[in-house]
Image 1 (cartoon, rainbow, N blue to C red):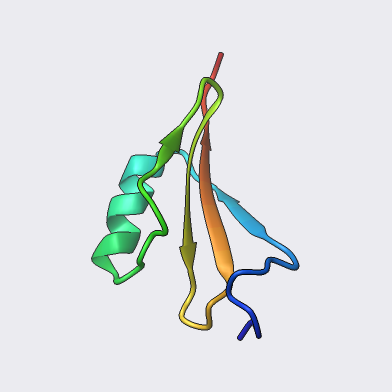
Image 2 (cartoon, rainbow, N blue to C red):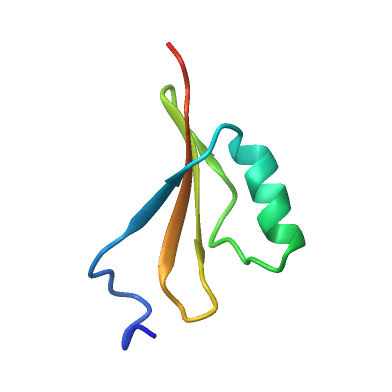
Length: 64
């Protein structure tokens, strides 16, 4: 587990086809997201921690 949960030494992004569906699935399985999904003109993304405290991101690319 990270020694400091507020410091990020690396990150892992998981590209998903539908961020809202992935978010719902992960929450249903016990994931606690740090905040609501964020939406920009080019992507939808959200951050959560695995059981060991590592920071993970899901990201859906928008076509445009």
